[in-house]
Amino acid sequence: MALWRKNRGIQNLSSDTIRGARAAYYGLVTHFDRLVGVVMSALRKSGLDRNTIVIYTSDHGDMAGENGMWWKNNFYEGSVTVPLIVSCPGVFPSGIRVREITSLIDVCPTLLDLAGARPLPGATGASLAPLLRGERMGWANEAFSEFPPVMGVPAMRMIRSGRWKLNYYETYRP
Image (cartoon, rainbow, N blue to C red; front, side, top):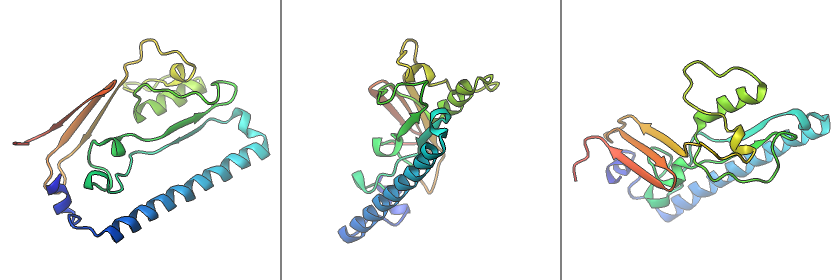
């Protein structure tokens, strides 16, 4: 990853720069959380909170300097693990936590399932509805990720299965 940092010009960041970048990131997260609160409050006030599906997630994490990494483009947990909060009152119990491995490709099949629509032809994701109802039988418990070659860093792929993760970097030579 030294090549990754060098190619992005971030190999020698000062502690003040790192602290400022983290403060800005945490500020953005806090601001967004407040905006989600405004939306949730409006749903409650309008009476739509009982029949509205709300999904809160992100496409990737941000390393925020952990392990000397920033942004995404790596397979550390800070980059590949994201929040996925689902609210669907009357359908799923509140306050449950699912520990199985899921993927963002499961969000669309979940929404279609909850809406009573047919699955998309050729879709590879699976509805999360059974997991959210507490039914864990038959869940693959896997996720895949990949990045194309970018800025001199080779293509890379990852498979996560349960507590195990395999990272593969093309053209990597120890």
